[in-house]
Image (cartoon, rainbow, N blue to C red; front, side):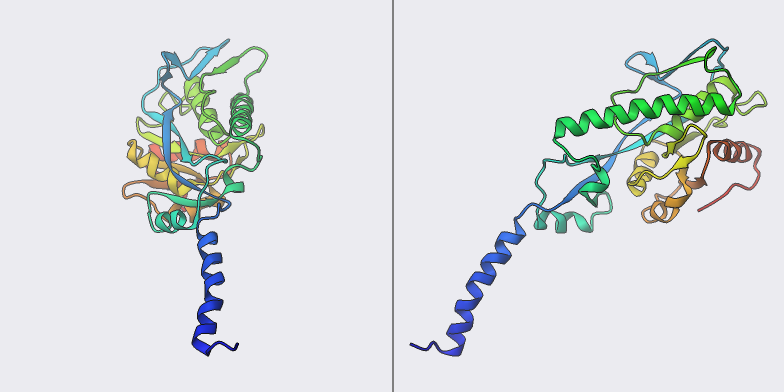
Length: 260
């Protein structure tokens, strides 16, 4: 029997609609991220200083150096199309490829272990970069960093700046922060090179939410940082630890500072 054209189209549409329905609720390789916690590396955590130094005199500091984070759905969390659409236009959240947030893959437990390992490596490298910048002997000066429960390597720059401020300030007796609340992000190499990290648009929101007025951003991520830049937050691009220190010194003196 031959079906009328309309009936035939309707019958053909049934499997298509079924496939669309399945696709709509199928898990997709994305995560939903939002601004996370910030932490002042010049302050304390759980009753202990975040930065402790032995083998060299340290100074009292004013102001804050706030590392920033994002909070994302876990690698095993299912995210489907309706959820993505719901968050796509929400400026307080971001839809990000899963591999951009969890490049190592693995289970939730494996990801957490990997991120904590990355943070520990970052802290060691941050100390190495800061002591190298200050021409301090790492065999004589020991730095202990107490923030191992926050995963990932993106606090490296802020750790290095915190060590510099604790040991040397702005180099002229003042605070590197100038008494301000400075936030930022960026990996750090042993040679002081600052690297990109991702999620900077969300981190700027976290920084402003927690009182920062200046945000140090890896220069390569300036465009991303500008996309949802909160009012009252000044972006300062950096490519190295020495460049970040120079920019903060210039800011304190009222001199021109690089801008995104």
